Every structure is written in structure tokens, then in C-alpha cells.
Image 1 (cartoon, helix red, strand yellow):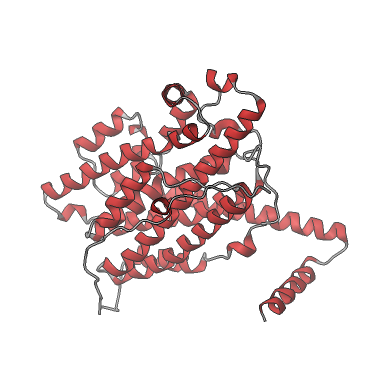
Image 2 (spheres, rainbow, N blue to C red):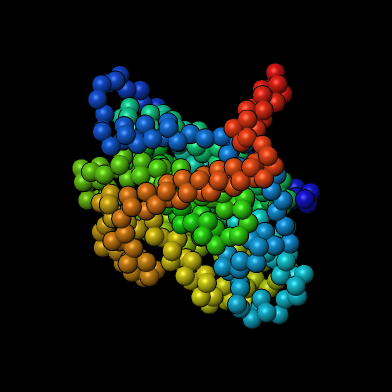
Length: 376
């Protein structure tokens, strides 16, 4: 395990963002929206402990974190990549994995702050209920990605400027619906697609498990934003909707450009202009950027921000085809993937215990007793 880490300047490791808005307390404890209350029940039932559910004893090869799956390498199959030595390619794989997981980590902390903000600013009590479960989810995600970056990869990158700019806008805006729109719809929607790429391509079991379980949580978060905002924009003036749609367009371009990875190429001493051209021409990255919007586009359409400027932006970006995707079906598939992984891991543990001649239920009882003794 590597112990190398970047010691970042304090300006890059701490960031103070002023935020406005009113804290709203609701005395209406009766009723609530049925679909949102059902989502709240699921949010409570689906809580889990990352320390126990994941096998943190897995060793990650820092020379090949994705285990030779270069779909996540934006310069794979480019002339630049072909000119690199095996050692240079290994270093690029490590730094790319560290940079990407660092951005996941920073995004999750942004989500943690935004979810806690929603608890205070959203006027409806049913939304406050669900947002409270999301605060716990996001804290768990920050814990996991922090542990993975620190203990398994050993290298941390600062927040990407494009992500930082978007988070800054979302946190500063005092309007509760803009917190939903920026975080739940835009940032979380894009994160879902990025997590899905890792889940479907990596052969590294710990990264696969982390992203699979996080996706099951994030699918509920995106659904939360959609349910909370459905019908809300229909009650706004055209000028107010135009302002939200302008934000959606700006945020979409910021998120698309979030995955350029300039920080990695600069750190590795590679020519930035050449790398920018190589990544722009990479079929892998072009396909990846398109798929990033598979969760955002149908949700933006579902909440009613589907005016001419939004449609034109998505046509120009080549992602308008995702408008017909079913967000509920995508969420159900994410939760099913987590259940499948749980079943596979449980079956593997049972087989291992049988080979060792140990009753798996008794083995777990012993482990729990040891844990309780250590806590005491």
C-alpha cells in the first residue's frame, strides 16, 4: 500500500462559501405526499454501514487500480498513450484513478452540505424527512471515498475547477429549489452515470462494490429531487423558468467539461494542449461524456424545464436522445444491482466458510462478539 499523498495548500483543502436563505420550520405534521413518504420509508430501510458491508482488507494494485480496464482512461487508444512506456502508463492509471475518486469524494461532500441545507430551507415536512436520510447517506459516501483514496490509492487531488464553480453557485443560492436542481438533478445525476461506468467496467472488487452500493443510494436521491420539483416549475412565471433553464444549460456544460483531467496531465508533466486535443478526439471519452447525461436529461424533462434553450443545448451536446429514458426504471435497476452484489458476496462467504469447515452463521456471531468486546 502506498503512503504517497499530496499535501495541498490550505486554500485548496478548506473552502468557505457564504450561503443565504431562510430556515423554514413547518408545524404541519399531518399528511404529506404519498410518493415522497414512501421514498422516505425506503431511505430509512436502506441504511447500511460501510465499515461492515465492504471488505476493506482487499489490496488495490496502485500500478493498475482498474485492473487493465482502460475504458476509464481518457487517453486510451490515442497516439499519446501508445508512446508511453509501461511505467508511464501505470503512473497515468494511478493518477487518473486518484483524480476521479477525489472528484467523487469532493462531490459527495458537496452533496452532504446541500442535503443538510435542504433540511433547513425546504418548506415541506415530508421533504425534510427524506433529506435527513440523505444527510446520513452522503456522510457514508464521503467516508468511503475518503478511505479508498487515502488507504488504497494514496494520492489525493483537489477539487476540479468546474465542479467547484458549480458547487459554489448551488451553495450560495438562497432558493431551496435551486439546491435541489443543482445537486439532486444535475450533480447527482451526472455522478450516477460516472459511478455506473466504474461499476460496469472495473475488475477491481472494492471499487466495484463501493460504486454499486453508492449508486443504489444516489438513485433515491435523484428520485427525491424529481418528486420534490415535479409540478413546482409550472407555478412559476416564464421569466423564473427561463432563469432555471439558463442555469441547467450552464451547469450541463460545466459538468461535461469536468472530466477533462487537466490536473492529471499537468502533474505528470505531459503537454496540456496535446493532451486536450487527444482527449477531445478520443472515442472513449466522447461516448463517456454522452452517457454522463443519461440520468440528467430525462429528469430535467420530467420536472418541466424543457424549454427551447435546454433542448437546443442537449441537441448541440448530442445527448437529446436520453429524453425518453425512464428515470424510475433506471433507479430500480441500480437497486437491483446492489441486491445482486449482496447475494454474490453472501454466497462467496458461505462457500469459503464451508471450505474451512465453519458454520458461517457461527463465524459471524464470533466476529460480532469480538467487535463488541473491542468497542467496550
